[in-house]
Image 1: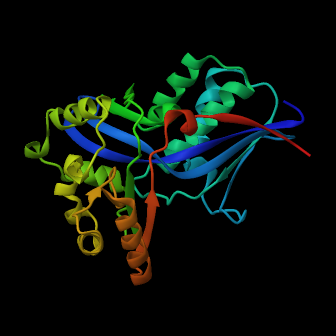
Image 2: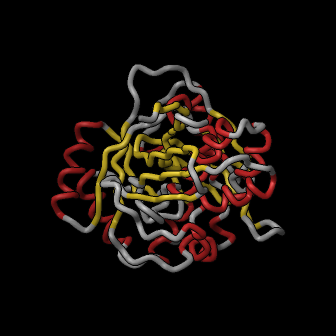
Length: 305
């Protein structure tokens, strides 16, 4: 691929529903979740190079202190290299915009973005890429596709939800509070769940059917089982939830294992709430919109100077 580079987006996601059905024998949990990729994105480039390396930078181009071995994108490269001979060296550049450890899937999305680029760069079989994605992490397969999706199993079973084209897309206020997080946040959240919190997947199936029929989701459609235990695990989340509820007029829903919160609603009203929350401090508020699969998973070739 001399003389060219490949690039793709790595979008964040929000869980419109998240149900935990029970603990599996392998230590994972079965879930049912409707997710949507949104237009808050990292960007990822892959180009031929003298040596293989990963560079993770901020929007200003400055390196971020994230060790290569601790990033899922690094794990994806290692797993892929163990499965197939990758001819030639390459450099991967990840420009981070998605907050880290926020429940938005940024690390998983970066790994999926790398795998999409690697598939084209090294002419890999889609089946191989999908297998590696499932090995790397439960959220990575969803980001290979993007769009509106139903997740099942431990998250590796991904079904696209293809609603009719709507006259307008919905919007969401996304709030990332600045609060301390446990060292193993996701593990702590699962550990706090009790059998009474386990569901049967009905909420996710109801929303899947509604979206497939063309409905626009609203605050009454969103749910996350971790909302029942999150305040026990994360100090400061209760106050963050209160701030969002006062600003938006709706109690927010957690996305993933948090701590990010979101509210669906009318864009003009949400924009006012975003401004108010950012002026008050204590976190970052953003207005996000759905990102369809065609945009979320598109790979483009860039000419190099």
